[in-house]
Image (cartoon, rainbow, N blue to C red; front, side, top):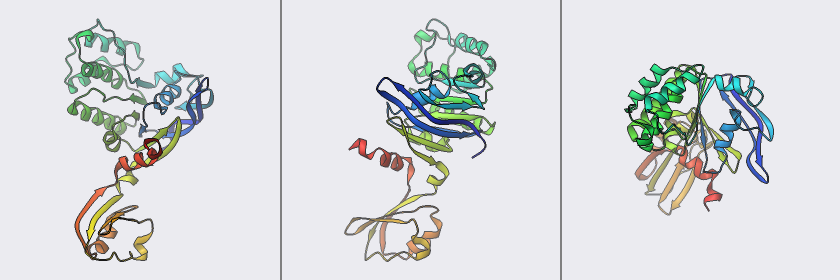
Length: 296
């Protein structure tokens, strides 16, 4: 990871007896796309709003670009652009007028770029917000948030209500921002979006940071599911480290690799297997493991 652009230390937010965020410590590098995962009520939005200085932490601290997020919140807002989960727009203004308004009030606003993003999202900016669908309103908010030339973009559920084409375009723009050296914090319920766009992701549970996953490491892991025609031999010692073998039945086995698949291919070819299926582990397996107790 590059030098940290965002740091939180034991960040905690309580509302009376309710703890919305509990001792959260994270570090996000400059030019990194960082994902936030967790069910509703897990603390994702509280983390984002506290990290940006919209909420005062009960304890702990957060810094963005070396600035204290609460004490220097105005300065933090100058270098960031934030899209909340439920963006509220002026209902009687036309889309282009909304974009002009937000471009004018942000120090790094760029109306021409906002209009270009609207075109990429196939947005008709001549309509009044009142007569726009939920997806069109989402696109207006995205064009307003993605257009300023800021150091960090924070997106809370940015692809909700969008069609698949627009969803992919948003992910593409997030990766473009990364290539420009900007930091992107991306909260989503859609695991495939996190897998595609993020360098790392953290999973929150009941306000606690339950797990942090480096996505490049996860992409190297695979699961092999196969039927057996005979007994499964013990893997060579050089391959056995970290290898997880599970019996799924008398004639069925699951083998999970800790890293690259290629060193295993020679051994797998010698096994008495039929109907072999090889698939990436994926973020779903990690998410399910963290929230297994809750689901039960």
